[in-house]
Structure formats: C-alpha cells, structure tokens
Amino acid sequence: MGIFDMFKKKKPQKKGILSPTNGTLLEITEVPDEVFSNKIMGDGFAIKSSDGMILSPVDGTVEMVFDTKHAIGLKTEVGLEILIHLGIDTVNLKGEGFEVFVNEGDSVTAGDKLIKMDVDFIQKNAKSDISPVIFTNLEENQTIKVIAGNVEAKEMNRIEIVK
Image 1 (cartoon, rainbow, N blue to C red):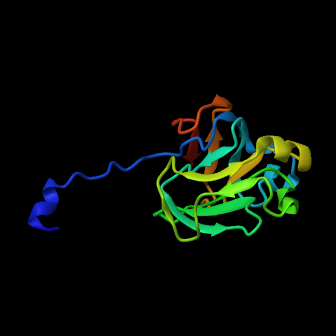
Image 2: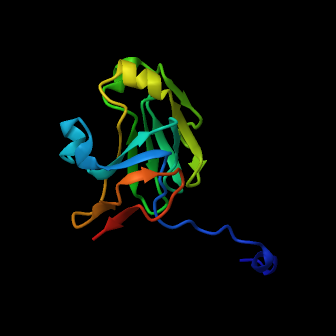
C-alpha cells in the first residue's frame, strides 16, 4: 500500500446475497423441476420475476453465459459458484425471450443487470417462468435459508447461507 492509498475511498464491500429481481422469492423445493427441487445440482432458492429484470445477487465474475441465454454462471471472490437458470425448459427457446447485458469474464457488483427475460413470452412458451438460483459448490454442512414472499430487487436479508 502506497502512502497516498490511505486517502483513497474504499468501495464498501457488500455482504450477503441480494434479491436478484422484483417479484416473489420462493423455496427451491417449489421449482417445478425435480433436478432443482430435489437439490440435485445444489441448494438454492427460486424467483418468480414480475418484471423480468435479473440482477446479480453477489459481487463476482461472470463465469459463463449459455449460448441459449437461459442461464448464467457467477463466481464470487471467495469461490462460491452460482447458477441462475431462467425459467424451466427454456433451453428449448434457443435464446428467444432473453436479452443478456454481460459477457463471460465480466466483473459484476451485486445489483448489476445480468439478463432481461420477457416474462409473458416465457409463460406462454416454456414449462414455467420460475427461475432457480443454485449454489453449486456449497460445503456439505451449508444450506440456504430463505424468507419467502414478495420481494424487491436488491433487497437484503432474505437469502442467507447457513451452517
């Protein structure tokens, strides 16, 4: 650290997991797909977006954006991996109904725009618009605690990793 670094304002580190959308926060067990609801890929939560705007729930790096735009993978600085899967059976839409705002390798801050999904289109053309958010590499003793119900984008203290 240089002598003048002490005078620079540090960006406050956001703690916790932000709600990634306006809408409804759900338990992962409510996802209408057994791979997600049975936590085969990992524990997490689900969202039913009212406006389709999906924000990053954490600070991190975009590890992957699926070609079909229906899913995005994030990784935090401490190595936590998160998969955001927009809707159920949306891979079959081949990217239609999604607008992606980030690229693989981009750094994101909690609250940054990731993807906009056309909720009406998804409801008409996919199995469900409920979107699982999966933590794919939690430690064995960790689980996700959710305070379900209506939620606003960027809302804190609704999603927590517990041991």
